[in-house]
Image (tube, rainbow, N blue to C red; front, side):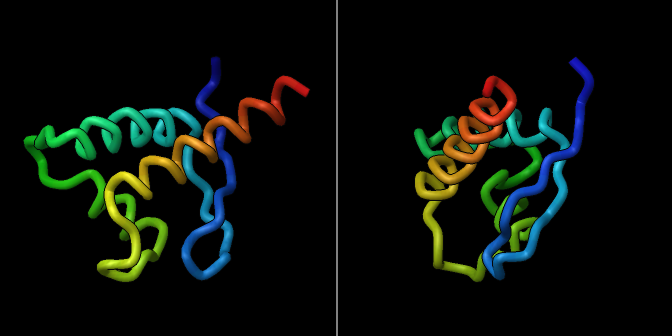
Amino acid sequence: MENFMVGIHDWNDQVVEVPMGTLIAWKGALKLEAAGMKHSRGSVATHVRTVLSVPDGNMSVSELADYISRTVADINNQLAG
């Protein structure tokens, strides 16, 4: 499958275009980080918060993982329907 761009809403309700493959990678990495695993290059949650303009302290890692999981599921449902 081609890695296509999808639009997701950031904290300020602006649309940010992100490759679908990146969203899927974020989903897995955030779930692992929420479970306590560390990433060698630093926090994935911090990177995702920066991309989505989330102010510090407003979303926990698990909340961020849930948001990305719901977004991936919504996109999959749109593609299937």
